[in-house]
Image (cartoon, rainbow, N blue to C red; front, side, top):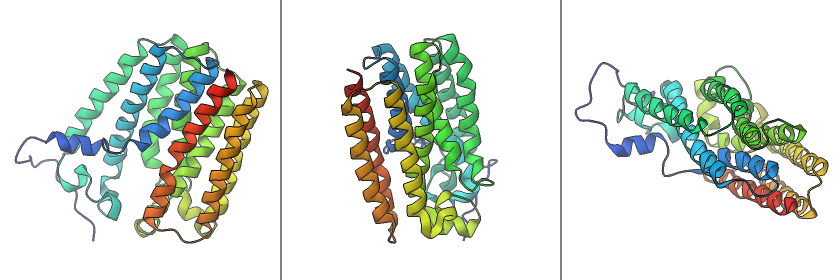
Length: 297
């Protein structure tokens, strides 16, 4: 049975508790922040040949946390009519009544002002690129209504952080910028398809779309295909930039880990198993980062 959405007109009995805002931005689970952060770190380290400035590191770490937090608020605002009908999301603050939409909008405005403040310390090219990041963050939550692979837009949004990071270092965009961007898009399709397995049955009932539904029993094949594309783009970026062999050893390790995931996905996996596989992608992002660092020394 659907959980009814709290009415905006009724005031809560007391002021919202800080824990509700922490729950709103998934403060206890920063896997999403890491998956957004890693592509920016790849670009920072790659474009800086191993040693980005401390200032840029601080800005993009803070920016990744802020924008991921803003993104999940936008997602919850857009999906509050769906979330009550999905077992995994039915206790989110906007569904359970811990927060009203107006509270979420105010918090969102504060976060976006913080993100705008960080832009002050970056170059004009990065400023010009920044509205695209906001547009993508606002668009993504609605894509599951009409796009069979909404994970594609998630990948573009996460990859755009890497484009901005590259621009902040070099003040220009190069071939390697777009190869890292393409790798990030493919990577997001891989890990978010795995993540979407958790909600596949509920999503089918309520009529929203995901790559896990589109691929169906061939989810293993879809994941394997996009993992291969990711590794191809990363390999090409390393080749044209003459990175050291250590970088390619890292890609080999990632290929083995992703291959293992594909094998597991050929059988039915539980929601807990899917979430565990999803979280392994933080290690994959870290291996790519370590490979870029060692490959540019």
